[in-house]
Image 1 (spheres, rainbow, N blue to C red):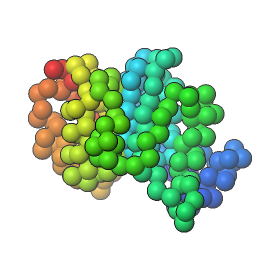
Image 2: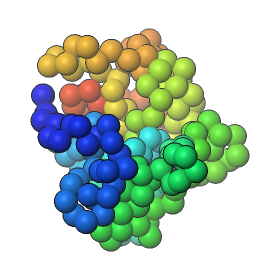
Image 3: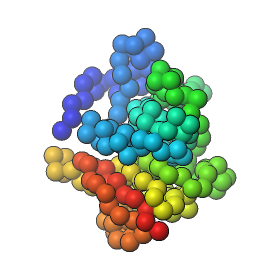
Length: 205
């Protein structure tokens, strides 16, 4: 299991944001280093990417950096304001991308993925999709509908928290049940790899 240093700061995102601003701390990610490497590997060279659930920007930074030089990333996250102020996770995510020199490749859609889909803000024919949003059964069901409507043959889909990792058997989410009940049985997709809690699929037809 990966280490979570300074875990107390992750429960205090405003403090973490200030420290990150001055280079004294890093944003939190719920991905293991292995998952982060895997994500980057499959995002490499892709041109039209979507991320649902950006959190503090670690995964977005990986994806945007690995995309084709002309690639574009859309990040969907509600980033709800706190006491009328910008969400610290949103501020950190923007800073992560800016420091990596890929902020110009990234568009943020502030809201829930279902709202973005209804408003038709998510383009068709994406070639890379990373889902790490609402981990409930219904949440992944909604995001899977987005995958079905925006992916094409050859699209790579990475689904975080859809397998229970052996070192952490308590990580049982509705998303794992939906994956087992539906996604794993969908013959339009091929399972390429399972990395810790993340499943990587490729759309065939």
